[in-house]
Image 1: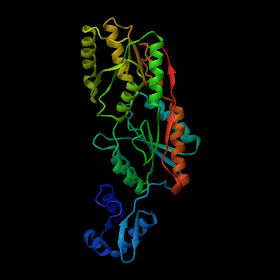
Image 2 (image 1 turned 30 degrees about the horizontal axis):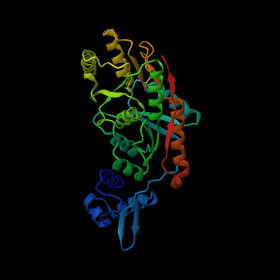
Image 3 (image 1 turned 30 degrees about the vertical axis):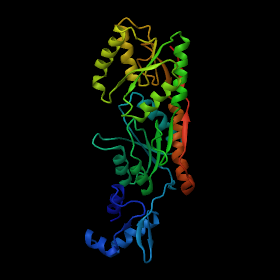
Image 4 (image 1 turned 90 degrees about the horizontal axis):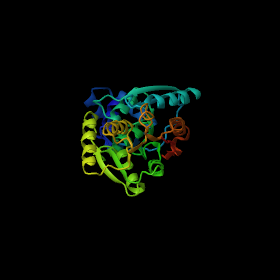
Length: 333
């Protein structure tokens, strides 16, 4: 009975402030006794999800605050396909274990949105969750509903979950300034930028905006689509086009580590390895191809994420979402 009403809330059938049907209507519709309906509503009232007022009926009431409970089990929702996933989860696992907390991992199914994955966890009583969207956009309305249902949420590498969860992410603008300065110090004057299409990922938009702000005299060379299978061909075509026109820059800022390696490989084949590449991700091939990186501090990020979820459980109704910027580390090559 309770799950049926929660489903309606998550799907947006019942919105904040909406009245839900009377007990008799719910009993007839779901074919359960009024005693069962009344008990389910009592449980939801105790959980502060609904308000029952004599003469006014029962209405849904959303709250955007922390839910007080022991943080015995945390869940990380992320993509294991990210090249730096193993490094991040190792630090997060160590942090959780040091605090006596069990960390579970769940990878989002392709057919599900991140929000649907979170709701599946909620239905199983797993309500303290850290999320690494890996560039995927988040739906604010659904996050608001999940928070109201009783989930404590913290997000890594994005601020799009705010204000329904704490957000822990790298200072993209500061990192971009460090990378641009590093490349320019090596007498690489003309800077170019290669990123993902900005209408696909919020993080891509932030990186592009940061480059335009701090990349003095630099310009966007081209942008790559969300699907990666065509990236090698696009990079080859675009770099050869720039070379024919004599417009290859002296340095290229490419936030995505995999694409930075593809750029370096192609430039090497074009006998243009003198073009300096800089990226936000340190991968196995970064050193091999001389790519300067501004590496994320996964240890500090994991510690901060854990503290965020613990703070939500500890502060309860006094909790308010916050943003946390984590500095990275420059690896010059």
